[in-house]
Image 1 (cartoon, rainbow, N blue to C red):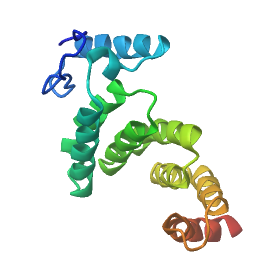
Image 2: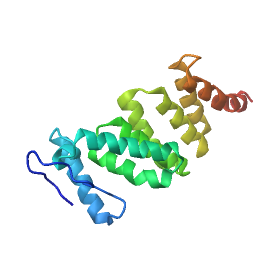
Image 3: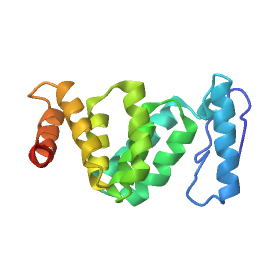
Length: 174
């Protein structure tokens, strides 16, 4: 794995891939990413990954998610999370992959971080869905109600949160 690029060097075709990494290598990359962020840089900057490469990676991972190929998308989403640990979009992609792979408890911290960083109601909706999936109905209802409070009726998130909250409200009323 390359850790630095000479000034003016083009991004390597595959500067980082977590897909086949050993746990100790992944830990080393994570440590490098955290150190880079602490220094005010992203791992992408440290590796010399261009903005165009990042955009292409987001597009590729998003395309896999759009096709329902979450198993294939997860390594790329994790790569983006390491490359850009301060970017909520990569955290949202990781959470989406984990949730759709029936790993809602693992997805929760990623969506919580997205909500803290962006305030996006869709993150609140996803938090509710994950809580509901693991049987935490009170937390799920609270998340859905928060999503409802932060959206307009015409917003698709509002409609989804309304649908998800209805059975929980009926149960809570009894």
